Image (cartoon, rainbow, N blue to C red; front, top):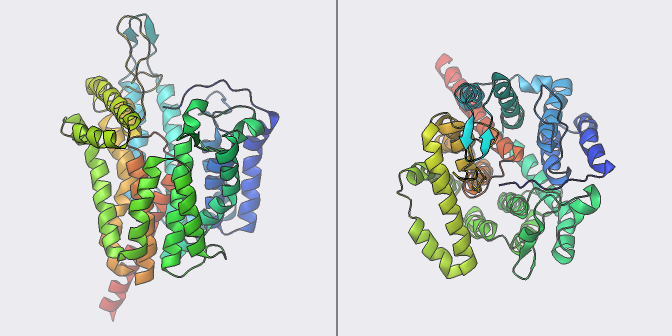
Length: 465
């Protein structure tokens, strides 16, 4: 759950948001569209102020996520619109984004009633609220996925993606090291306020940096992405924007451990050796199994078939704190699941209607950590399946297309599949569904789709001959 924190932004915070579209335009003038898109969306995640938005009537709030996505889309439309014509928008896997949009209207229609709990009155939704939700989905979900699908069509394009990701995190690392030593203060010093509860940055007798990201866990995920990308580039003997990828991978792996995020460190310990040693086809199979496990988790939790007891026992061997944290998450999931079952297919919608309240006081008593339970309780089964299907289905498509690529190309695709699969895993305990993750999913879909189209063209030529 992202808390509501006091915000007293500096003028620079507003200038950063207002100036980002102009910086994006400059990047699109100087760089190829794929590289510019990565810089705009990833840069927005790493540099722009959190918890700040322009809230104009009639449109969704313009925060750093929506501003980054719209800036990338406008840059492509103004300067590289020809690159957006290849995949027909809303076709293939991308149709799930349209399902999400339609579902937001249906959710609004079925949630027009007031919710009365104790002394709390939660308003019903209007069609205007449905329109606002649909617009938000189009901007923050469809746009990054579509741009990834449209701009990344060849495995060679992934070298650009990985190189930029590695270079960005190497450039970012001095800020990370500063906060490791001095505590997470940069967002406050630059933008005037902390972006998250400060007590959550204390870990293991030291600090867990955030820099300008949403949370320390988010920063650790980006460092893991960059470390995996560097190892993949090293495996295919490619440099990362002119930098030695092997040395970059080693440095970023050490930085990942220093961030004190157990989950991200485990991802690195599991995935990085597999990228370095295992054949790409097997990597894709394992990533697909991981994606299927993510898709199965809500079903198992809903049917009370997930082995929560065994996981709690394993967590207790790490530390009492880990067990308590995991147990707290499971307890809140069970409360939210019970509430979600009352409107299972389309969810409870917005205004906090999906949250659990005290029956006497009406006070909000729920903690929504995992994105999956937020999607299920607010958007129902329709929204949950569409969201996770949009992200993870390209991994399954990559397994079907693996034989169409050369060995080195397969490795790059496998690395991208790992990044998308781990992103899906991370959405089970955490709620940070960033547009960069959707860009990665769209890039994987685009590469698979282009390989399928190329194979079909070759088949038609051979038949014609």
